[in-house]
Image (cartoon, rainbow, N blue to C red; front, side, top):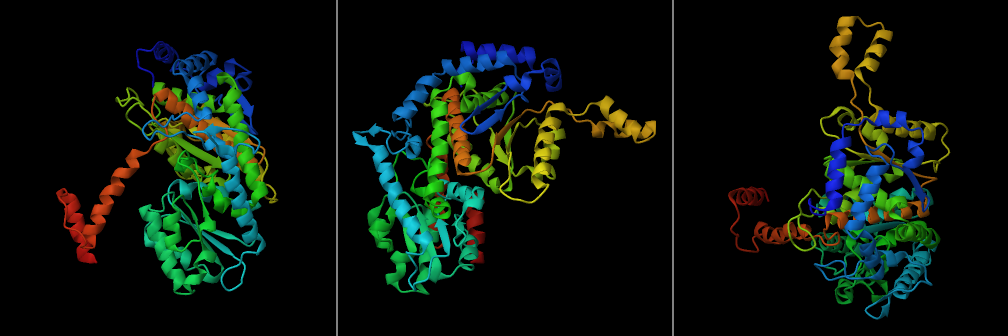
Length: 544
């Protein structure tokens, strides 16, 4: 974030000291237009942020902070293709992946939007052949199962998308996702599929990701126990840029779908990494998915900051994190098909902004990304919502819901929305001692029992939350929802002055694991580890 000495930060600190004791229920009682003042709409999404401890002056100060941090200039640099990923000297252009075909954007003298659509056209042609049965397996039977082998963004995005858009999937194609190097993951999938009707997608940019390639080679070995080597090109395709390695694996060059170094893994579902989603929902729905994200891009690019959904969502998060001290954020989708969305956001937010040095390499002077966690809301109500209501930590919540369901079961959606709205109200209002006492008196409890139970039944309230609504969960609105959070991450990275687009912290464990893997198989001399690591290696080798 800007240095504590900056005028914007100091103004917010003074404002926080003056206002942090306010009660949300009193703010609502004092202003009948509070909901109207603190809600926004754009790209098919509606954001209610009125249940946060803020007022119009807070928003003005946060907007001033964003301008002081150069958000508008950094936003322009993002969309222009400047190399804002400083440590890797790369542009960050996931927004180009959802630009319409007639848009233009040059990078290093190349027209990249046309390159994007050329790959998308190849993906569409391949997907329609598989979906229509014109590209069968080696025995002539139509493909029935697709196994995506990837990790990180190559796994989380496609899996989340296929689950979220369940009502739109192809009825014949079952989608499976393998990411864990733990063999139980792949074994569970292989036990359920027929090699003659299964298509494998190996997603690895350089075709050398350790976990992905271990799973890919095991899947290849399993397949070749049932089929001739000549069948490999019909059952294995790659999302990669390494043509030589994919060919050596047995994948035909025409079955390799590339993407670019300006596409970060956690921002890659819009690229060829999204091939499983395209196979599942078809090219027209996939284009709607891209169009929803592009609509949010245009909103983020053009709307004034105080009316800008990603900017406001980010700035409210900054207020809660850096001024009110919230160390985590819970994501609560009230939609079963969004069950993997909290996990998707974990990578998007924490891998992007979980940084301790600024873009210039100096230690940050404030807290950066909070811990992101959650589950579908109705499950959470019967699990960890207890902590959110009465625990010692204040945890802001993002509620996400669709106004209309994708099913015809009567009564369910009304109950679902009632729970969503009731929880956000309960977090805001709480229940004070007088209210609890009156309820127990109405139940006829004796005075001594009331006084004994009273502390246990009081809810402090004043717990902040946002509510994000969409008309229904569909390809367009899912695209807009993901892009909303992508741009939120960007805004917060600008405020914290960190590089949101590298992930060096992911690499250290991978490097150490390569060394230890050799030691566990006795293919390398033991390295000098600490006594704990040496002891664990010894116990593992003894059990093998």
